[in-house]
Length: 195
Image: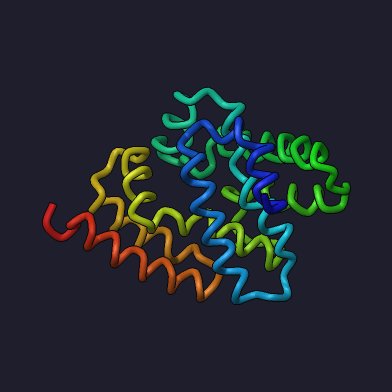
C-alpha cells in the first residue's frame, strides 16, 4: 500500500457522505495527472490535500449539505461551504497526526483545504492543482451523473453549466485541456445532444 493509500484508509469513514467516496478518488487521479506537468511542486502536499479536502462534509447534516451547499441561490458562499472547509482542516489534522506527519506538513495541507471552495484565488502551485482536480472530476461521466442530481439538472443541462461556469474557474492550462476532452466524451456517452 502506498503512503497515499494510507491517507485514504485513515480518512475513509469521513468519505461516506455526499458521494465523496467517488468524488475524492476521481479527483485524486486528476491531481496525479496534473502533477506530471508540474514536477517542482510538493506531490505529498497535493496528494494529502486532494484526499482530505472534502472530508469536512462528514460533520454536516446531509440535508443541509444539499439544500444549502448546492441548491441555494448563493450556494458557493453558504455557511455550510465555510463549515466544511474549517471542519476539513480540523479532521485532516487529526488524520495526518495519526499517521505521523509533522506540523509544518499538516499546516500546508490545511492552508489548501481552508478556502478551497470559497477562496477566489490559489495560494500556491500545490493549491492550484488541488483546486483544479477538485473541479475536474465533474467533467468525467461519473461526475456529471452524480453532480447533475445534486443540482437537480439533467446531464445535458449540467454539462452546459460546466462549460460556461466551471471551465473559466480552472487555473491551469492542462486542466482546461482535460476538462474539454472529458466533457466532449461525457456528452457523447450520455447522448447530451439527444436527451
